[in-house]
Image 1 (cartoon, one colour):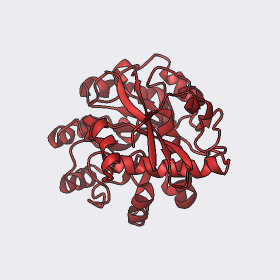
Image 2 (image 1 turned 30 degrees about the vertical axis):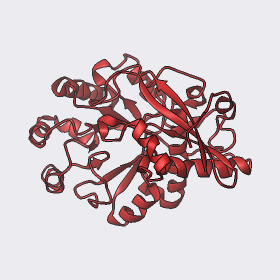
Image 3 (image 1 turned 90 degrees about the vertical axis):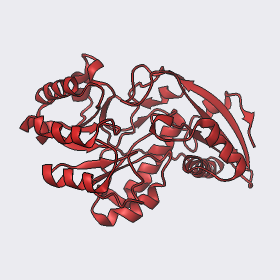
Length: 329
């Protein structure tokens, strides 16, 4: 196997979550030539703030053969892409996935947000929380009143709160706002007894993302599992936890469009197999970063995933051929 890399930097247009710095984010695209000479592409985009190894450490695992989970998933997706390119198949020619709308920072929410949500027919809205909780809650309550019963919210805290903070915050919510919240994602660091207690006492649904390995902890206390194909084996997670009456949300890793295409493909395949267990996804591109030739292929103005021209495999034929690649292994 031979691997070439193309390092890139993405420039955020605003803060992406409560844990992330606003600096440029670095990742690398992988061009993988397998032993049968078939070539596929994938992305590698770690979030050190969320517990990932650095990009250099991830790449080093390629040399040693002791792959990180993210590297293994990148290689898996590159293999799928390689097979499709070799047989001249388009993996994303028919995409039938619905998505939530994402508000990465409600404190800096554009005035047009309500119009975008309504025009795009979004019935789920994900809001990143945990920077200034009282102000965020007030704005969230106002937004819920404006949007009405047709929209429910997914609140993502990235474990920015402590257990006692979350426990005291929940009762402060108005009854209407609570009724409009679908789930609370990673509200505080994972501890199965505490998560189960919150779920049972307040009759709320918690969603497990970065806080713990869902298989290792059997997703105790969580009713929803967020799956990021960039670093997780979706088939393994679903096979293990689907019989436990869990629901699943597929999400990209706020990574390069190549990575997002891989996530879209994985979600499509799992939806075919698991049907209604797969809830509305988080796979749209809402202009997190400055636009480029890759991101222009993804359209996010409606709840339905839309791709302009997928090309063979995961697409981007012309864009990938124009890049400069450096040998890694």
